[in-house]
Amino acid sequence: MHIFFILIYQPIYNALIFLYNIFGDFGIAIIILTLLIKFALIPLSRKQIESQKEMQDIQPKIKDLQKKYKDNREELSKKTMALYREHKINPAAGCLPLIIQMVVFITMYRVIINLSSNHDLAIDAAQLYSFVTLPEGLDKFFLGFMNVTEPFAAIAVITALAQFYQLKMMQNKQNVAKKEAVATEKTDKTAEPDFATIMQKQMLFIVPIMTLFIGLKFPSGLAIYWLSSTVFMIAQQWVVMHKEKQTSTSPHK
Image (cartoon, rainbow, N blue to C red; front, side, top):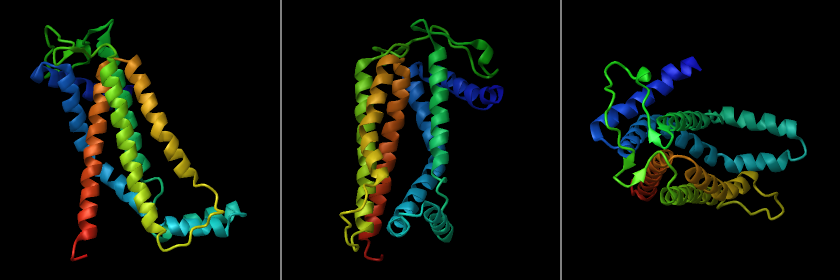
């Protein structure tokens, strides 16, 4: 825990206070810090996107293996891993960005909760670096009307809707990729439902509901972080999809 405090918690804590000293608004400081973190994670996000695309490209072959070895799970596992090695794909490669994002989220949660003391802002001077000034006259209102130390229903609802849109956008992209991958194959109507597809459909509603619950229960500063992060991911996905569309329609392809 001490290593976590030194390497992750304290830098984020100080960065947030540093940004507050510049902008004088904790909500804005949270948004700016979120964007800085997301930009820093772009290389990992790009790796995750590439990994997802590689997995989508070999889905038809995986489906073939599942049909061929449906009664032999051990052989199916061996053949699937051999397929991954053949295409130089690491199934776990896309997990690292998710783990890092979760660690950042947990850290932001702890920072905001620790700052939100008894419905007010309280900064622990002992946790500040020597070059970070302890601010005076703390303003707990984002844009003058939203108390970042208390839940705020409107921002919770907006965040949940943004989360739903982001997941829907991502699933639509994956569905298009799947349709393109099996466009030349005959549909097997007796095939078992795709477990991943079922989970995706469930997560489309479960995650936004969880987001709404958290937004209604915890300080709105956390919802501001979540909303900023989600909007950034929506923009990032739109850019990636736009580039892929341009590539697919390019006359030089």
